[in-house]
Length: 555
Image 1 (tube, rainbow, N blue to C red):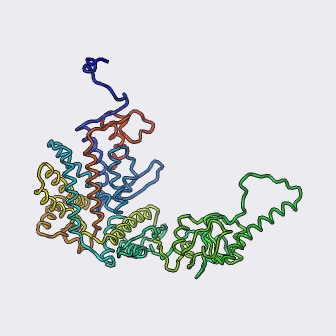
Image 2: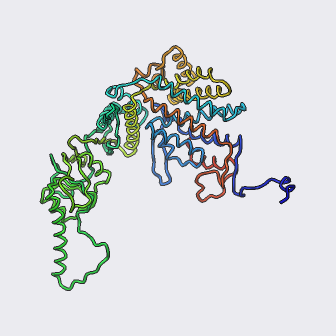
Image 3: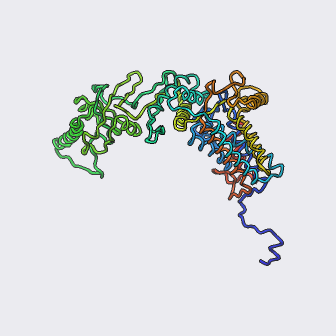
C-alpha cells in the first residue's frame, strides 16, 4: 500500500465485531455503570434501610439488606460494575461489615468526579486529589478513633449491636450480641507480644428452624445434627473416649469386579460368615481402643450397628467432614483414616449429650478451643438473614478486639472527616484542591442517605450535623429513630475504626481505577457474559443493556 493510500483512508486494525468507546464516552459509560451499582444498594444503608428480594434463575429467593450479598446475587453483566462489586467483596473480606458504605461512597466519588470532568479538570488531577484525600482521611480516622480495652465487654457488645441494627437480628440484638461477645472471647488468644488474636476458624455456626430467635444459644464445643445408628445405643456419654473415623465400618469391597461360582449352599454361608467376621473384627478393634463414642464420616453396616450397640458404644454415621475437623479441635482427637493402625493416642476426650427435642448431639471437650453458635429462627429465610447479620457482627467484634479502636456511628465520623478534609483542601495547591473538596462532599453521602432511608429531610439533617461539628462535637451523629442530632458514641452507636478506614480506601481506589480508563476496546459485546446472544448493542449501550436486565428492577 502506498503512502498516499494510507493517508487517504483510515487504517483499520480491529475486527468488524469489535467495539470501542473512547475519551468522554468511555468515562461516561464507566461512571454510569458504577453509579448504577451504588444506587442499587443505597436504600439498604442504616437501621432504617429496606431489604431486597433477589430471585435467581432457579427460583430461589434471598431476602436481605446485606450489601455484598445483594451484589453477589444480582445478575450483573458489565465489566465496570463488576469492578465496583469487588469493592464490596474486599470490604467484606477485610472488615466484615461496611460493604454498602464502601460501594455508596465509591459511587458518589464518581458522581462528583463527573462534575469536575465537565469543568475540564483532567482525570489525572482528580485521581491525585482523591488519593491525597484518602490518605488524609485515614490519618484523621486514626486521630479521631477511641482506643478501647479488649476486656471492655460493654463497649464491644455495643459494636455488635450497632452492626446488627437494621438487619434480621435486630429484634433480639441484646441477646445475640452477648452470645457474639462470649463466642469471640472463647476463640481469642493472647500472643507472646501481648496482642489479641481472634481465630474465627474455631467458631462454628449451626442453624435450626422452627424456634424463636431468642432461643439461640452458645455451646463451648461442637454440635452434630445426627441420630444414633441403633436404638439400643446409649445417647449420652460423660468423660467419654471419642473416636473420629474417616473409614466405613462396612464389608470391604474389592477394587475390581469379580464373579464367584457357588455350587454348594455351604459355600455361600461361608461367604456370609466371613463378612460377619470382618464386621466383628472392625467393631472389636474399636472396642479394644477403648472408644465410648464413634463419629464416622462414612457408612456403618446394619450388622456392625448391632455389634456396636452390644458393646455399649454410641455411634453416628455420615457425619460431615467439617464437623469432624471441628470436633478434632474440640476434643483434641485425630481423624482416623485407617482403623487397623489407630491407637489410643488418636482418641479424644469429652462429654457427649443428646438433645432429644432438637435431635442434636452436644460435644464438649476439656479446655476446648472451639465454640458453636446455634442460631434459631422460625423459617429458612429468617435463619439465613440472621446468619448473615451475625457473621457481620462476629467480624466486627473480632476486628474491634484485634484493632482496639472504635468510632462514633450515625454519620458522625463522615461529617467530621468531611469538615477536616475541607480544612486540609486549603493547604492543597492546584486543581487537586477541588478533588479533595469533592471527596469531602462524597463522604457526607452517608448521613444524607441515613436520613433519607429514615424518612427524614437529608438537607436539614446535614445542616444540623455540620453545625454540631463546627461547635467541636466530634461524636455528633444522627439518631434515625428520633431524627435528632446527638452524641452517638454515648448512645451506644459504635463502629470499628478499621472498617471505616477500609471503606474509604476501597472506595477511593475503585473510583481512581475507573477514572483512569479513557478507552474501552471489546472483541464483541461490552458485557462479561454474552450467553447465546452474540449481537449486543453498539457502543456504550451494549454493556449497560446487559446491566439493565440484571439491575433495572431494583433501582
